[in-house]
Image (cartoon, rainbow, N blue to C red; front, side):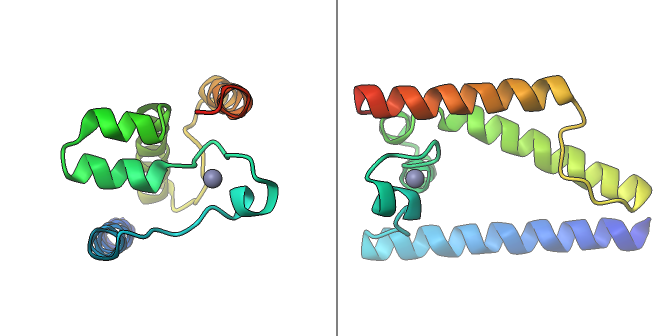
Length: 125
Ligand SMILES: [Zn+2]
């Protein structure tokens, strides 16, 4: 169990370091990674604007962050729940299963994402 806990800590630390590095590069260059879905289709995906929104959050610009992607706070809560549940399950059982542990939550979040995807492309946000 100690070995699995160490793996989770190392993985999450590496992920946090990559996010910090990406934010720093984005801050210095003013450019982020383009969305492949948007480049190919011309439509926004549910995550479009999230990197810009995270960049704004790092600067404590909350209103601007919501302008980039209004659903980003909900996506962040879901991601945090998913990461926490998956990490704790892995530490406890050694099984890596990417889920919140609640099918109702997974399905509800998927429904909200699909609705957001459609609405943001219809009204152009
Ligand atoms: Zn996108």
